[in-house]
Length: 264
Length: 264
Image (tube, rainbow over all chains, first blue to last red):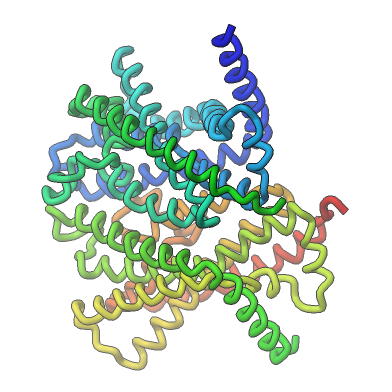
């Protein structure tokens, strides 16, 4: 009975958000295009033969950057911006009365957006293969499933981090600037612009203890067939989720007590 | 056109927007840290590229730093003026408040492009100049008057091109209403400006100098700094800047004919 109710809740949320997202197809297509920075980076790497020094062949490197593009496409999170707007406009108040944590709403929004984005990402990948036909490959089913799982875990980590930052809205109103600050290490250390193996050793010695390499580098290596520690990476991802989730619950319960219903 | 009137109006703009922005003082501090981290991050990325190579696209590390400095200055200018104002256009058009702008007895493009200011961008501009002075020292550039005039001409042309690109995309909002993500696409393309143009492959170089002249924005001023620029390139940049300014102005005047207000 209860599980049926939860199932219906999830289904309705997803359906509503998906039809909402379909309205903005062009938007999402443009957003998908804006994620092509990894391809520019690939161009610098291969055009200057930089990959020789890190012992990755051209083909494997181009697969890596394609996968980095894909992982990034399906782990983009913007919950802090939505939440900030909603809380400044006082829209959070009605959400708080409902017997559903508003973050489920945002979560469904993100999932629906990913579904809408999928065909556009495929089209971009198709063009990528036209220009780089030698890098076409087919990962085996097990690896594919594992990398989908790890991409989803990466999405979850980022969603949790951003939700924690979003909860700071209860105290500071403008939490998005903190998110922009956090985005900088994410951009440079996650492996979106350069694979983590190429980092100098003084960075590599500590980076695997931070969540960053598990956001893009690990799933992308897994999917592209580059060398990586599968069980270690997955367990670190799960570990970070277990660390972040209680933190989110704590800050949420503290924050809702502070809530002052701005704008209404 | 009455210059004194416009100066007076601009003074008022500065006053009101600074007053409202300084309300969020911690925000400015966070933005400063973001700017510093983002500069550190891009130098880190650059150092990865130069790890085992002396040259990238014919540029040494010290020379490529100049591009980084100019990019930081231009990014600061974007964050101070272009970003806060031109994202506002989207809001004006969506909510129909562009009516009030068009009714005012001053030029609408002037109003819309200079109304707001974001003081945290200043810090980024200063950071960029600091790095630039550092580069002038390590590259042993001697400052002559002809060098100073040429570099200021090319830099101001870059600013004009950048402004026109932003303004052009924001203007399309009149037809497409939501163009947040078109701006994101431009942002990701601008990312190319962080690296010497020669480090990319031929097709990308052509695309970013003919269709979207991002190549001009940072590479040509940097070449002037290094004294390796040729006259026709500088002339070309001036011509491109003038063409872009004029067309973006014409395009705006053309576009407001199609403006049909909202919710009124």
